[in-house]
Length: 169
Image 1 (tube, rainbow, N blue to C red):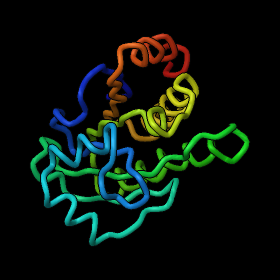
Image 2: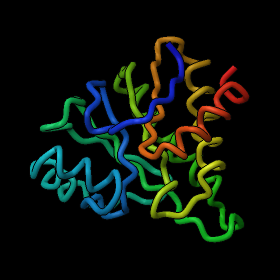
Image 3: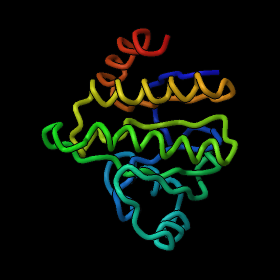
């Protein structure tokens, strides 16, 4: 068990839950959010409408519907501006909020995208560092967890590959 990194498509993984880097309306958008909504089907959008909004740094859970994953945990990352507006604190809160749900549900296999590393503009190296640090800390507390950081872009994967042995010891 522990943390792993892979290059791939998070919507194809058969795990207890996948994490969605969502927008605050939970209505599907671009990037991983749009891909998850398209693959899960219309019932995901219907359930998200019933939930309403999700503030930055918090998380909400839905069923996975047509995805191989049983559940989707939606979290809203910070939009990066200059690094001086609590962006790192909010990003850490995203991972911690998701992990709180993971623990309360008894999930053991969870796949995470790079939260805020795409259209939200968070510098990729810093976003990966936060992700690996938070996932590694969670795995140290709960040895049964198998947490995967799923990176879609080859260049992001290479950055994660270089940071992994430094952060996840």
